[in-house]
Length: 625
Image (cartoon, rainbow, N blue to C red; front, side, top):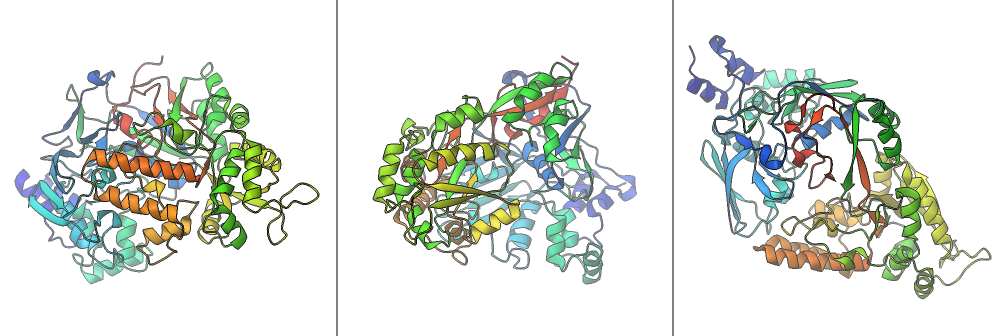
């Protein structure tokens, strides 16, 4: 009979021929199996200490999703990370047993002994080596080299395997963002299930078998095959081993996706019961417009996506008819809805105007946020610039109040001063080329309340001589037009992370991504390492990039906090984005039988990973309340 030690050795080996279901083949040699269970050193979750109840295993939780792509919510909510946050945003080892950090430069990770992927193959430093050598440093898989997040002062880290369970990354200068990257909703992926993935890699698989796999999967080459089979952000491959609490068992296309418990998940409760408690999640695809009605009628045991505050009254009334609870969590975006003037748009005149801070401030001052708050948010949101919330230790009142007072008189003065004093017979301001000053605001049309808010903004801006026209399009076209400079202004939620700590990167405040709709072209330049887009040509965005570079070089939290405040001061004073309200409320629907579901919480993608930091693996079904 095969011994456990020999079995683990076989599974970790890189010498595999042929590779179809390599790990499963090894597990079945001579009938041997790796029994389900947590690692020898599991992570113990003391629920009683958290004010929750230890539970029992079993049950199925249904969720409604607006399309197949939304299965990406499962690894976000499951929140199995090398290092993760608790509810107070303290970093803790999760998949790791422990870690050490020296001067924000040397990071040593210790894995849990006996930890396995969901298919039973060992989770060891071989899985890190595979990503570092065979993925990051393979030009066919990573044409641009290793991820930019791992580059410090133009240099990649030193990667060392100290033993089967210990790996180290080190830089010659601080990398303060490294741990936060690992705690993120979509972390920089440092490890993959190598025993499974090697069957799709040209270094390990023979050419004939690889050619058959490429043909069978209808892709162009082995790198496309590898990428397709190893997609973790949207877990479409049911055979891909995972470390998440639940694993997908359904291949797309499908109208229903089943995620089953990972038999080797690494967490247990204080009574030694392996998590997750819930056996499976069933995700049913539905029309987004129907999800609120279905959730209210009891067709979902846990629902956050595709419902909004506008649905709250209906959902709350459903508690009297169906076994559901509806709670309100606070959204932590810098602004629930923000106007984004495109500082890199192709229209020369509007680009010049939007780069004038007087125009940006005037447009902000012209908005009556109190009216919008009362009309669209029942007066319970917080009128604010697009900035961080009081729940962050970095919050300052002056950031939230920057240019949000409703002051049409001052707005008119600033617009006149900026060169828009000339008007037509209807009172609309005229551009220098004679056009009416009409701002086309583009939207992806994904939030129903956007049109109500923009109607009010249209009234407010009409009073200062600015006309608006709203254009809705699909998200794909919407983003394409922005990146191409065709859009002069759009509407979108504000800063993703409205509750940062000083040790989280302030990159959202500087042009670092083409997802930042106020300066997408500048962000693309940064993101591409200068190979695409255009560099900023305004002093304030350049200063923000310099400060971000200083933050990345900083070795102490106090220094990082000082830099955060410098960047927040510039960002809010310059009104690069026009926030309206934040701290809006988000309905969360759950079964009346679901235990350990917080009645109050902070709702956000980053850094809370929606449900992630609240550990849905600890939710369980009891009797109906």
